Image: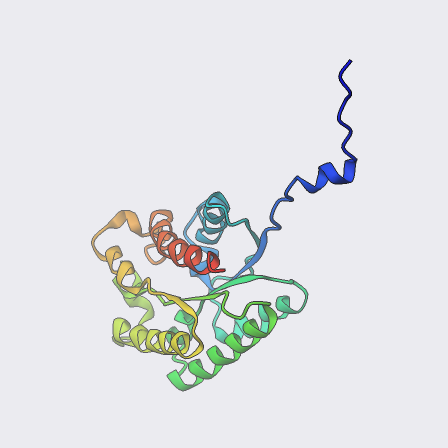
Length: 223
């Protein structure tokens, strides 16, 4: 009779590689991150991003999306940043500023608030590079966008804020995904605009996610 090979349980378990612990992801921002204009969570780009990264072999869970319609940088500071103290997040995205511009917050104040937000996020996450900045889309191309411009040049004003975002990303060595050019497509493609005539549709948010996913995958694949 052949002798059975006995392998101690602990030795056997050592051959089994434990599953990777998912990275805890927080999506910070305003209506463009909570995805106003969509019908359910499955159409929100942060949820799609976490799913696509996980399917690409980078386990990510969307731990929190405290973004709210109408939030400015100050609203984010007051209501979203406190989550960083207890959330133990590994990854963050930030898309904020459109409501500052609509409310005529000057560029200097916006820049100051943005810097404060970036400082706080980078203090909170273990790897300071795992923060992705996203530019503000051009809402002025939507059917109702002009109603919120106060007769100002919306595209020019948003570009000024986006230049600040890009400059800070460069100064800090952070990833920055520029969705501003892509958002211009909402001008002539009705299917890219939500029923409210102002926010992007699920289809437009999906286009943004495709860009953000590529950058997030590159960033998180670094050894």
